[in-house]
Image: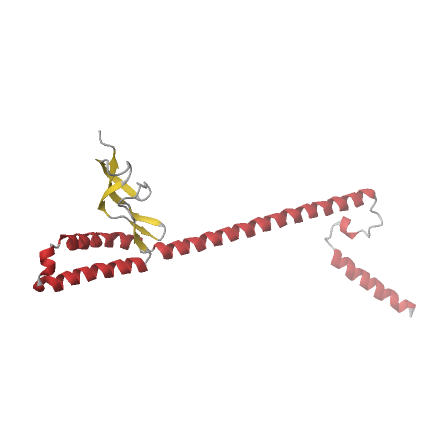
Length: 198
């Protein structure tokens, strides 16, 4: 039976040798030949792997933070697009508002009392109120101007009016109404500002 085991062992050794063919010698040693130099190499390799692991962890953290920032920016851009999508359209409709306001202001009192024209006047005023309501529903609001101090972020001074009745820098006349959409300026109010007389 011992004689039968030898050919099997030799065949197994030959199979192992065939499997390990091409593997570098340093990987084939059992570790018995490794002295202190081999242990140092192993420690250095381990330290290098630990440093690489730490660097990779940092890179992953930075990548996660960057991804989160990109996501937040995208969410903000989407929200802004929703809030201000109608800005161009709203700016165009303001000229309709201006013309409608001028039409209402130009109606003389005698025409308002005339029975034949009363329906037309009421219809124009109702249209103006409806337009105001639609503006409000879409976050478009008129900027307060008269008797307010000049705010360069909302008002555009077109001229100065010498007067003692108002403090200098106070708005005394509004030539064109200003409008905001949500918290952004849609159109500044064009105004005349009080100044001290000479």
